[in-house]
Image 1: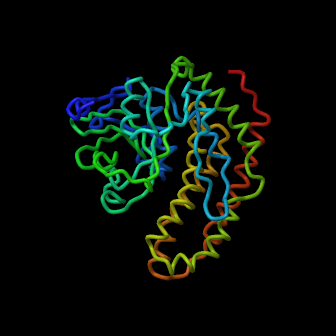
Image 2: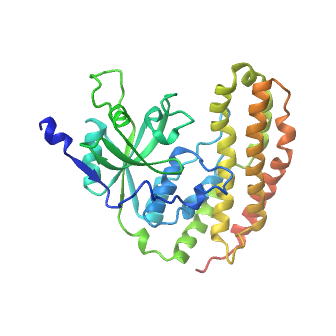
Image 3: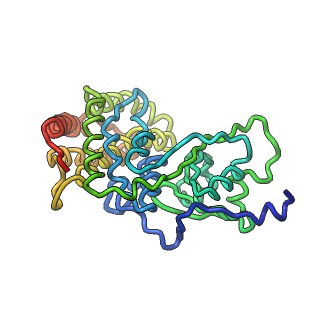
Length: 341
């Protein structure tokens, strides 16, 4: 295929999205403590929302988090649950051609492509890394226009477009072959339509079953307490390494803890009736843990920047108790509640 015909190609998934008019899901609204959670969970929230599906139904998985020793669990929706809830089939994409070639093929077939890319070339990260810092993140490719050098994509808390030089560098269009450049990890997403036919009651019933499943699997210890002790131990090292290092550490730790707890509370709110969350004791507990984490991330930044003393264990003492009481309330509720919907 010659360059002229190659550049004329364009493809998009069936859903038409306008970046200028796109309204993100309330889970990414300004009222949330954590507008952005992590890239993989965030783009699933928006991809489901854009397809008219309720992302709250998938959220029970967030309760199965733990402090992993040097980070909190990077929580991601299980692929089998996405298929059962929404009819979303996800398979790994074998990247044996340039990524843009695979994307053109898959989008033309009505599918989406999730791919790891360099956030350096993503304009939606303006102010946090765009053209300043290279880093791995994942996006959902939704439309490609080769002649206009334009890409429409889901990332973090919304839907965006990039073009021109960003497009060329993101896809390495003019980069010479480099055997040391590994192909990105990528996935194909296709919806079979079954999710759009479910009633809200049926979706809530499935979601309650997922709460029961993930509670059975959840940590039996108190990960907030484990993390508080760890933070106290590593704070001197964080202070010596500086604010940029702290920001990376805080994303993998404090943000994941806080965002997971806020999503757990959001799931319970969605399951409830007449504005009252399901299991209010747990919903309130996890909302408060999220708020404590949000204040801690700023306190930590100030401590690192100034070298001043901070006692993470004292700051998280209330959150430690709230985790225990919230989990106990969840177990009581979902072990005894009947769901006849």
